[in-house]
Length: 224
Image (tube, rainbow, N blue to C red; front, side, top):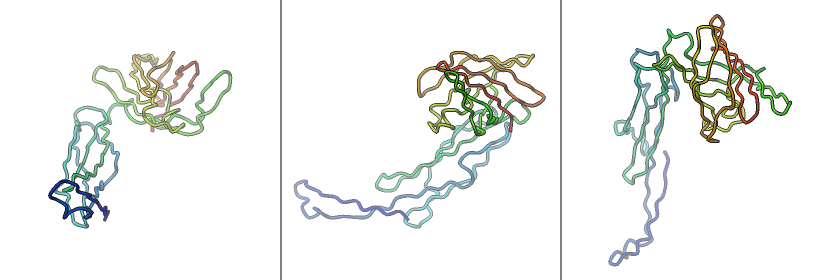
C-alpha cells in the first residue's frame, strides 16, 4: 500500500471552513506478471502474461487500460503499455517489450559481442571485456536491422543507455560480405565513418569493423 497525504490551503471566498484541511489519497500500484521483455515466435499468438493492480489493498486490475501494437505476423520490437489512474488523477504505468522473431530465419535473432572484440583509438587497443547482446531483425526487403553496429560499446559497456546505440540497416551478399545501408546514433546525432563486415553462415558469426569518430571498433558477434 502506498499512501500519500495531499494538503489543500483553499483561499477562495466563501470557502474558509476548508482552509488547512488535509486528506489522504491512495496511490495505485501496478505490477506485471511474467517478464518485462519477452520473445514471441513469428506467426504465433501473443498471450499477455498478465498484470495486477491494487489500490488501498484492493484488487483493481479490471480498471487497467492496456494498449498494444504487437503484430506477430511481422518480425520486430513491439510494446504493450498498462496504465491505471486513481480518483485524484494519479497514475501508475508499466510497459512490456515484445520481440517477434522468425525462428526459421537463420540470421535473425540475438548475438553476443565477444569479449576479445576491441576499440582502437590513437593506437591504443581496449578490449570490450564482456559479452554484450545485439539484436538483428529481418526486414521485409531482404535487409536486416541491427540495434547497435558498435556492439554495445557505449549503450551497454559504458552504460549510456539505448540512446547511444548506433542502429543501422545491413545487407548480406551471397559471398557473406556485409554492407551497411544506413546508420544513426541518436545521442550524438551522427553515424559511422566507415564499415566493413562478413557473415559466416556455418557458425552464425559476424566479423565487423565499424569506424566511428576516427576510432575502429573491431567486433565478433556470435549468435546465442
